[in-house]
Image 1 (cartoon, rainbow, N blue to C red):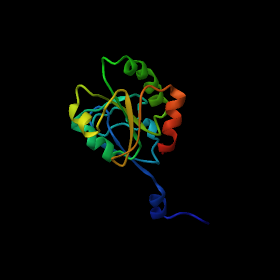
Image 2 (image 1 turned 90 degrees about the vertical axis):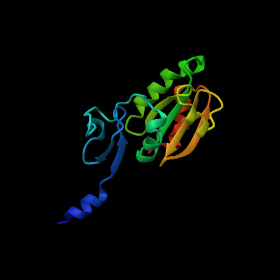
Image 3 (image 1 turned 120 degrees about the horizontal axis):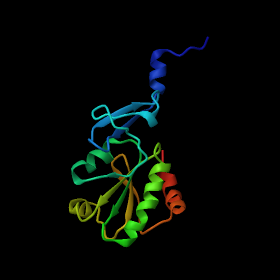
Amino acid sequence: MNEKTYEEEMSERVEIKLVCLKCQTLNKIIDASPAETSVCEKCGLPLLTGRVGELTTTFFAETIENTNLPVVVNFWTSWCGHCRNFESVFAEAASELKLQALLFRVETEEEPELVRQFAMMTTPTQVVFRGGKEVARQTGVSQLPLLMEWLKPHLS
């Protein structure tokens, strides 16, 4: 008999931390529960929706620092044609990566503090964060295959 002790089983479990897109509550998911059906412990909404979330200065740091999945942020501007064209590509990437990364967007005209903090010079710009730190950045519009190829080394 090669049965594992409770302590051995617990040490092998992976804990995923996710910030709810709606209420910004930090949730912990243990790998024993299916991540794709996990809901926020506060508001009850699904945590991994496969949709692009909105980030503001208020919850930006908490989100990128407390989520242990990669966080991909698209800095965009509502009047930018390239930004609007890229929205569907980014949304499709969010759907495809729903268990591997969290995708958000930041409207640069509404969040000037984040623009200054991350020295945004042009839109659209995508930034990948891991453990609260910027690990990659690309500027300009990309088609889905190019975006996915760029993201591949940064995914869980």
